[in-house]
Image (tube, rainbow, N blue to C red; front, side):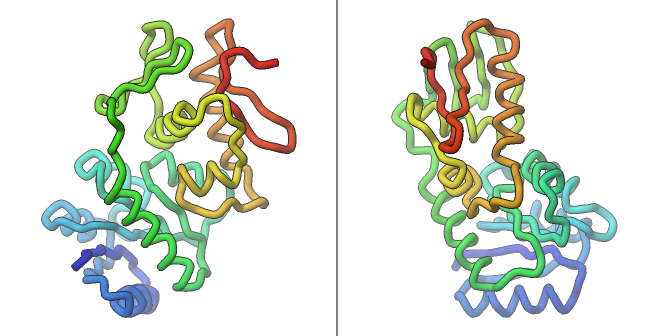
Length: 229
C-alpha cells in the first residue's frame, strides 16, 4: 500500500485530507506540526509527503529543504493559501515538486498525487547519466552542470528545467508543457513562475558566455538552441 505523510496543523483540513486520500486506498499518517512531521518523515518510508507551508515549530519551506537533503527521491506537495508567483518560486526552490493553493478540490489533489507517484516510480531511466548539448554537460547522477568545463550551481528546479530542455533541445517548449512535465502541474496564466525560472537559468547558463543557448519564441514558449536565427 502506498504510504503518504500529511503535515497540516489545521485539524479540520488534516482530517479532510486523510479521509479523502484513504478513500483512494492510500495509507495516510498525519502530523500536526513541522517537528513531528520531520521526525515521522525521517523515521518511516513514505512514498509522498504533503505539507502545509505555515506550520508550528518548523515552517513548511524550511522543512522541505531539510527533508530534500535526506530524502531526495520522496516527492513533496506544498499546500498553502499563499499563491503569488514569489510564494510558488520559494516553494519550488525549497525542493517541492508541486504547489497547490487553498482552497482546492480533492479531485485536483488526487490527480497531482497520482502524477507524482507515477513520475517518481518511472523516473531515472536514462541510458546514460550524462546529457550533453553544445558546450553544456549535465551529470544526472552528480546533479552537476558544466559549461565549457566550468561548474554552474543550479537549484533542484533549475536543474530539472534544464534537463527537460536538454532532452528536448531545438524544439519550442510551451509554458503549458513545461509546467506539466517539469512541475507536474497545470499552467496558471495568472502567474509567471515559468518565466521566472527561465530567467534564473539564463543568468546562470548564458550571462557569462558569448553564445546564448536559451531563447524566447514570442507567443510560443522557449527553446534551447545553439544557433538561433
